[in-house]
Length: 128
Image (cartoon, rainbow, N blue to C red; front, side):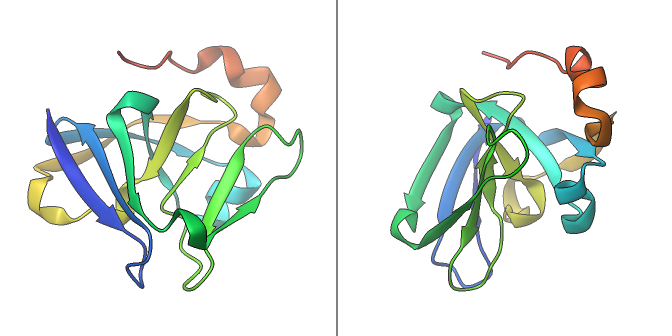
């Protein structure tokens, strides 16, 4: 396990996430993720640190209002959010992580978020 660093485009939002060098990510086809091309690295809260930029985040909720989507209010990038599937963890946008500590990125799961209710049971639990 290593601490990966990441940020939004303008650098206001800075984060760290503890994960292996070989990242296993998920892709979702919901209306939000499909438009963003978001690749999910979902981690428990204790493996995530927001280093700066909390005061510059814009929050957005839709549908069930469970997920808390967070965007930089300056550049608009969504570096991470609190997912509906794991409200006690975070989903980090792998595209926002610095390349230096990443050995590889493999998509291991495609999730049918467009039909969330029918497929929610397929989601894995958070790893410790």
